[in-house]
Image 1 (cartoon, rainbow, N blue to C red):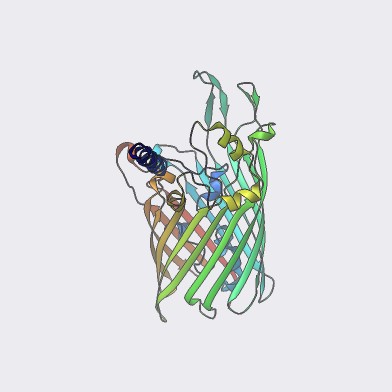
Image 2 (image 1 turned 120 degrees about the vertical axis):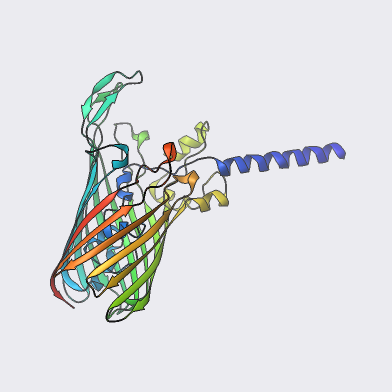
Length: 378
């Protein structure tokens, strides 16, 4: 009996040790075209990438297109420019975006946007460091959407997106690489308790980039998942009067992409790559090797607030958190806005964090946005 107990408890301790090791292993959920996860808007960027349940503006297409029917103006256009990875000394990498909407009537809106990510000049090398030439990788996403009020307080939006990722277009290492293409859809829901002045509580749910896999070669087994994502958000207006408005909110993000198996498990990797797109969305909520504790780490959080004075000036602050074993994107951000007639000018700044090799490469990221509020205001 004593030997049986030794074997039992020895096996139990080994299982627990393996579980703890799996939970503490860096196992980042990755996808192709990660530029679709970058916040392309200075207003949201100043609030820790908070955007699903905030007040609607022209850039709602990137966060929750269901917000458009509640926009104050009849139409609008948003432009944003973001120099990227400036803290690493890169001067030719940037993200540019264009978004706009038009109300068809009091209940319906159409919208569209374009995201363009330029990765600069890159020199390709083989496994031995020999040069294979240079290229200018670039990626873009083009989408169109339709939104409609379902009631005085609730709206729904759907969108269709085309994705092109031209990272390489050459024969490298005996493999022919080509630009990747994919198609995806968005679904958004938006609720606001006081639609007249957009105060009180607002809620949002956005499911974005729900679409096909993408491939850069002719090998059908080498297709990659795109960053399907679900975000649930809430915003509450703490102070609201004729002069001041203070709103605080939180977004919860979950990347609906399968968790990669641990290194060395070739059978699990084959199963990972062969998963269907729809099946991967559902399995992503329960496939982490470390169980529930690891699964919970795959949720990221945006916390932020916005103070608006006299509908003319705005200051913003926020924090974005992602677990250290799941990407470790953790940063504070701040921003400001100014309105002149029908033009909004927004800036955001990502506060430097970390030192040495632990310094956040996104430190000192600046976003600059222009919003043109067109048509009569409601």
